[in-house]
Image (cartoon, rainbow, N blue to C red; front, side, top):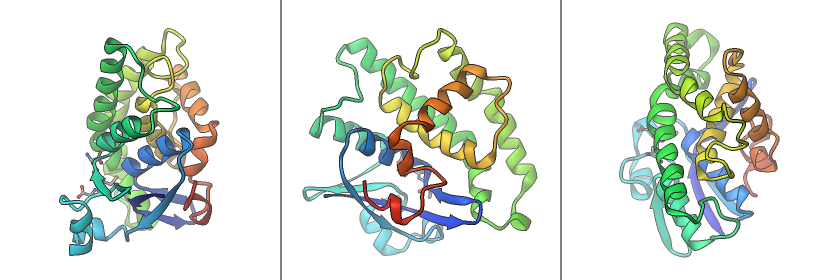
Length: 221
Ligand SMILES: N[C@@H](CCC(=O)N[C@@H](CS)C(=O)NCC(=O)O)C(=O)O
């Protein structure tokens, strides 16, 4: 069975999970692939103990082990899953459409998951008194100024998923849907995006990453 290295922890305000690992979990669930979770403590992402570096040379999550192969980086993992387990597909067949999915996946990684979202997400892993509210608000402002208008404009033509058909680009945005759910983020200025994030949250695959799904129930597919 596929093993997924990640970090996730239960808090009174919900189960919090690594965003990049949630992207992978959502894709595994959409593909109907069973997985097992190997959890590391959230603090180990900063301490980077040798056991973590043995799995991921940058001391990050996620990593995946499958049939003797160890690989890391969420987008590389999604491409591997697509090659190894092509059905159901999360990449279109046609060259230009494939490039679009890869470009949006890249945008989500750079501008959102590795860009503006951590300023909002990381403080949620601390007690309320220890959170830097100012830094969180700056993250929200940056997200509103850059990524959210871009996503809203892509969705303005009424498309169901961010690249038309459901694809690996939606998996990265499922992780954003999770963060904005915990943050109770106001999306009034972005109606098409708000409806899109609700569509993501109503998919069965979202149960694997929902803040309302217990650690036990999200351990396996
Ligand atoms: N490009 C990597 C980024 C992974 C990443 O930044 N993961 C976060 C958790 S969501 C992490 O491990 N952070 C610790 C660090 O940056 O050292 C991917 O897509 O997998």
